[in-house]
Length: 330
Image (cartoon, rainbow, N blue to C red; front, side, top):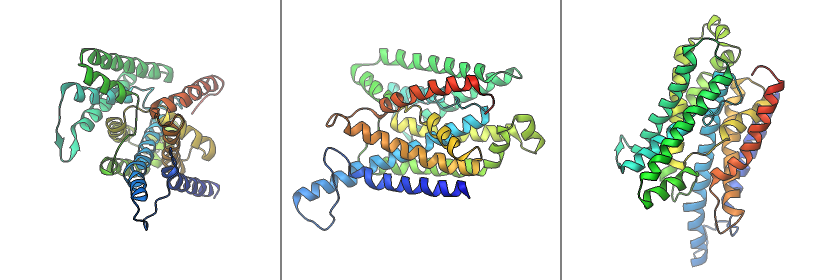
């Protein structure tokens, strides 16, 4: 009962955030659909074609990254396991940067080539991390995290090498994209992201029981009838799809996948039947708030939202690192 009440409160806060934040900017805009004045039409255009799509994509991006982080933390049984610490975001970034660097421009079944490249890079990265950790039994989570960090550094250095070899335009484009941003116009990009987020959410919730059991350990989950190998492969495929689609569109936005699920776990506990919708709502709401700060703190200049999340996530990561030294388990 307590968890359901918390979820309802979180849903209410999310709806309020989504309702209010599109109005916030250099100028407070409340759309007036009944006025025909030129000024009101301009403000209405800004609201419906710039601010509302931006808030929408921030919500879906934050939700996807939070869900991905929650899955990694459950599978690896470590709160420091996120798309960034495991190198998944760097793999997706390498894929998307390669698409830009080679000058490709194509779609497959309506899916942008950049998203396909980012998905492939994310899948390659998590496959490497999981494969290396499976090579030796009882490998510690510290070793697993260091493996992810090493892969992340390798992919990041490859991106820097590609950027160094690029012309000025491509170099600046890659650099700005690496900072993470949500600058879009219209709902076309949002509509392309929604299917990935919805499909990922449904599949991850379907495996909520398996996630609950896997938190207790691989041997325990196998004894309860969970096919851990198949489950992990499906979840990695889904999280790679989520991270790849977001990175391809918004660039690498860090620490959402670490902070959102951990905060929700502190409030709700480790039952993934409640943790999954809570992480989705909180992650989306959190990134919307961060993006609102990014576009208003030093307006009219906008700060890349990835910088805001890094400012908040860095100290949070250090706090988790210190906290984990004094606590054992998940």
